Length: 129
Image 1 (cartoon, rainbow, N blue to C red):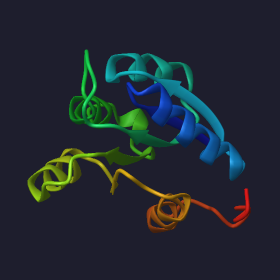
Image 2: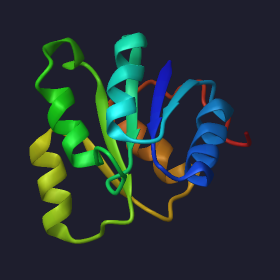
Image 3: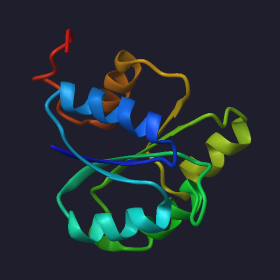
Image 4: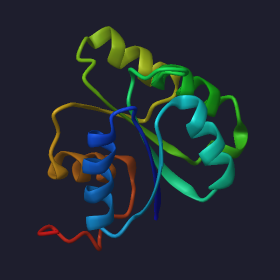
């Protein structure tokens, strides 16, 4: 399974990338929403996008809106992974087309649980990875 990680924080991308690779995912990355659209265009086989809200150039909310305008990404599961904790922000992201929402800080177990909620196959997840 291929996962797109979109976050302007190098540290967060590193943590999420290590986590995703640890459960057997292929990972591609972008540092903002605009770059993410280009990465997605080159990686149409991405099944999940983990998206930060607050980024320069194009934020995560704008990215979700752009992705959801393109029917070729209808099957892409989008999970916001952000410090935004206000309920209005959660609702706004879900209404824009996010499938799930995770608040930072997070654990691998939380991300795996959210994958299960999304219907993403995590049957081969190595819990000790």
